[in-house]
Length: 338
Ligand code: PBG
Image 1 (cartoon, helix red, strand yellow):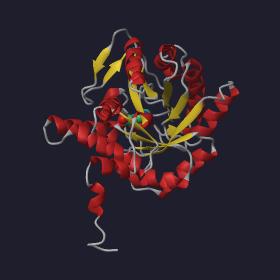
Image 2: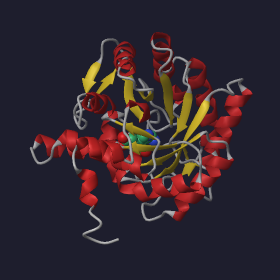
Image 3: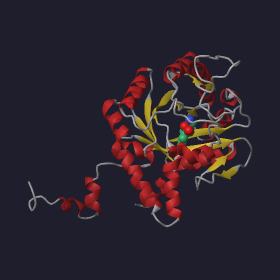
Image 4: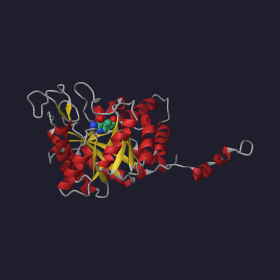
């Protein structure tokens, strides 16, 4: 049928008509809020590159978690800023480390709120890379690999050990984000070996080496001290490789999958969604947030409208869950009507 019999505008008559035919929904149910936690008390240190977000201490993070739970947000994602960094990122597997402390306190105050731990070494290592580096004289040295190359298998044992510590402290979900080969299988086995078979694993299955992480590196104080992450994170040019990465994580026992970043990778979200039936998350990363914030500050863009539009687009592409720095604002906006 063609015009004039067909008039698609009939279905856009008014808001009730549009509401009735809307194909995609957005609500608190699918939003996950990241939190940056550091040592101290009463800390609320604004992150300059991410207006509206702060580094929090355990006590202030608990208060924020309570607010998020009251808004109906089901989960928080914890990033830790340690007191002390070293070559292997020891605070990551210290039971007194910042994430175990925060996970414990949040679960105690708001037991129903899910705590997800971003499992990576980069916040804890003095070189800012996501694992153990090849260094002459150090453990695991491989003379066939370049100095400073991220050593895969020595990193795996750290991730397994740290995952158990974080889960024992209260984390419900471990979310390994380092793009280390085999990380899902090793973490699953470590959790099961420690009687933590109820702890879920959300894999950052397809994570790209992206410029959009720029503001985050201020937030988590984790920039690489040399080089970049291209030898472990994915090349933005590749999509078939993303499907191979995802297949491996499914085979290794991931409970949930993730694509990251979100907006520049909507095609990947859709392909993963069509290929697997596991719950799928997308990470709307720091740069996606901060560039809208910056344009809004200049008066060039309507923050609320653009934020909700991007969140809806990510849902439309196929994400069940979205990790977003707008989680709290989005729920408030949605409650007030769009
Ligand atoms: C840790 C990690 C990063 C992000 C999430 N987990 C940084 C990175 O990979 O460089 C980025 C999140 C964001 O930009 O919001 N590996």
